[in-house]
Every structure is written in structure tokens, then in C-alpha cells.
Length: 142
Image (cartoon, rainbow, N blue to C red):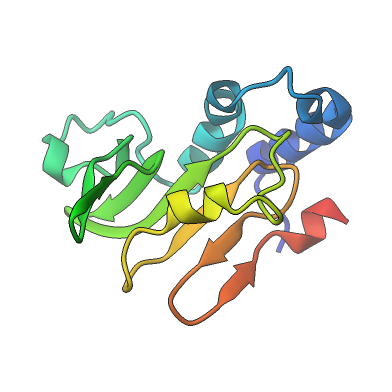
């Protein structure tokens, strides 16, 4: 199955300017606004609360405050369906190596029963769950 045209364009745009994005001059906020938000919107997530739902029922909560044990976590994105969190995404600027740097992994840990992801978009997002790590989109970065 081919990627939707919007997603293919995001991948093409990112690939054409990859060296700049990896240089450190491109920050996480830019990555989120220009690539991650449009990507998840294309997948059907209401990234901007266009439906006008109350905060506890939104599809996506940006910088959510999640209580885990005795501490509060704030993933960049908390994805939910009818107020039930399904997964979390911690974004990092493309200059960060999420596969070697342990800080993003600690930031994306949310609970023992969750699925979380960390991504810079330059490599496939790494999905973390209690049972395994999953590589995703591998064909897009080969």
C-alpha cells in the first residue's frame, strides 16, 4: 500500500533537505509544526481540536501532564480516543540520535501499560512498549 500523497510529500521534502535538518539549526518545534503535526493529521488525528472537544476528550493533547507513580511526565503528544490514552510521542530535533542517546527514551517512558514513541523523523520512529521495541516506516528511510 502506497503512502498517502501528503505523507509522501512530507517524506520527500524532509529527504531533500536532510543535511540541514540534521545540522542542529532545525529545532524540535519546527519538526513538530512542519512534519509531525501534518503527518498525524493525515492519519486522521484531530491535531488542533477542530472538533472543539473539551480538553479531557481531545484526540491529541500537546504537552500533556501525565502522573506516573510519584512524578509527572509531559510527553510532546498524548493521543487518546474518548479520553483514554492510546500512545504518547516524544519528539526530538533531527540532530538528536534517539537510538544512542538515552534521554529521549527516559522521556518517552510513560507507564508500564503504554505504547510510546520517540522520533526525529530522520529515522523510523522507535516505538516502545512493555514487551518489545518496534521499528516503523523502515522502507521510507532506506
